[in-house]
Image 1 (cartoon, one colour):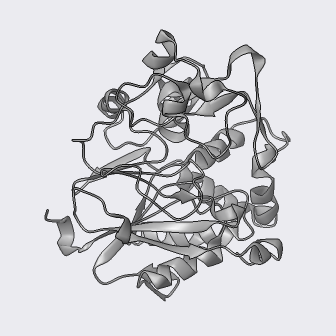
Image 2 (cartoon, helix red, strand yellow):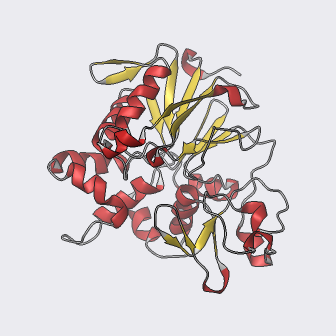
Length: 317
């Protein structure tokens, strides 16, 4: 496949979550050289999968690196749920406390209000999905019918303030678009059950994937590091639950997502799907995939930088 602009390909990078120094190290490993504050490669460009902010020790650096690259034409990016959360949080009444998950972002930007205002303006311009040169990118879930309807309304994949206001209404088209594309499809746990995640958050729903053609049980579709309680993995999916699920065909173009907090050595989900979120801030890996036009993805194209837990503790990641 010929890639536009004379490029050899794209380097897709998963959820950074404020590990700015690790991002710089990963870019160096990929052959990008920093010049006048912008990382460049002579034959490749980066695509960031969203979730630059929150949790990590060098959030301002992570945002600065990505933003400078995007604005210089050296990278593309899609919006993650954490960027969307930041935009929605900014719409709340003055004086409202930041959400718990955004505490570290607000701490690191507290003395830089103009910079944060500019970052929010940039977040508002980020597309929710991207399709170019034979690949597809979305933060959490590519629902073809939903994306087609969204692009009919927002052809460049970017949302406006009216869309954001509409999204406040649960069940609206805008709410469904932002929920599915940036958070994926979640199914509620039955009978008031909950899961206590490793980072201390109690969840009453579980994240599902979208590559099982005919799922029967919860275990066929669960996609998260936290195990379901009891024997729920064997529980049969109801008709309404199956109706909510999304399926991405094996024949569709290569798709890259983040969001799902994978662990261990990076591996392919399927020959045309790669998840690049490997829990960087949880002393994991910041992962990239070096895509050069192939229709079948291969595991030897993963590149990563390890995040040292000691660096996180001392604010150096």
